[in-house]
Image 1 (cartoon, rainbow, N blue to C red):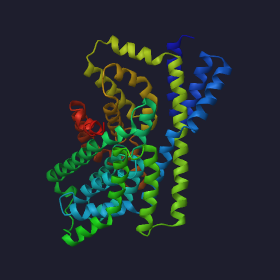
Image 2 (cartoon, one colour):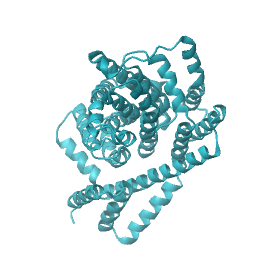
Image 3 (cartoon, rainbow, N blue to C red):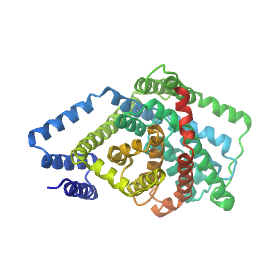
Image 4 (cartoon, rainbow, N blue to C red):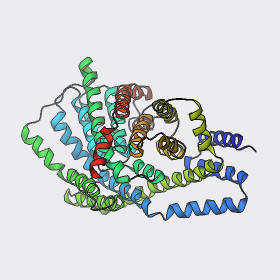
Length: 433
């Protein structure tokens, strides 16, 4: 069978299995194995399959994934998200849409010790939604703020998605972490600006809360000093070269456990739940990763990256136009695919093209993460939206999607800014060098 026809058949089969509900990791692995069997003999295919699973499982660099996941679960189960939200609420709650502003601020702060969009959205919805409902916030603003705020979780370091991108492309994970800080802060500010504009146009969307006295504001800051210290210690250690990202992940997980002891939220059940959830999440990530690597091996054997690269070059587009085409493809995929699977599936195809065009791989990694974030809140999939729907079953799905629209616009504007001014993302990594 011709390689191009085979590749089309395998892609159709992949999306067919996904439409039938097969988990993405198994769908990738099954279609990749069938495609590889057709291209090469059975013995070589099985040998490639075995080596892929074994090499991925023992890769030391991938130990950073369970450690950062564990850090996030401990922080969540230890109630650190509540302290962060309360601190933001004390300082911002008296403004128009203040509780929504506090939600975005809390999401940004929690992202600094979590690294997962879904975990950030789910955790902050439990903390913020009851308070916003108590003050009669419109469900569109309330759910939209939580769903959009959750996307910050994979941009502000530490980020599991950045780790996997760095491993796939052999790009500095430390550089990616540092590159995500300023765009992450800007995302918080852009989302807050969207809330301010919405509530200025329609103040009933988010009524003002009570103004807290300065003594309570200062007391709230004291409650979150540990989180700030942990973030500075982990990212500062990477920046100064004191420890590697893998070592920083272990330090972060240990630091989160110490904070739970200091905050008197430590318990054996909390640690047990954190370890169990970490094992489940890590198994899911590794299953998808192994499936994606197998699928990437098939793509290489079928010369798909070269074909797509030749097709894009044949369009006779300029450097920027090629980038726009790639980003539009990501936006389309984001409407129907999981963010992790999307990155693992597309990076081996698009990254060589980006490199040949002379774009910085660290900068491209940040742009990809931001486009993936957009996919988390856009229909028809919008995983963050479905997470909020699961937490708030009485709110219509349409209401949540309407609520995230202003944040989608804000995120598109920020992506355009990062594309136009790459130094926004590259300034911190360049100072490290």
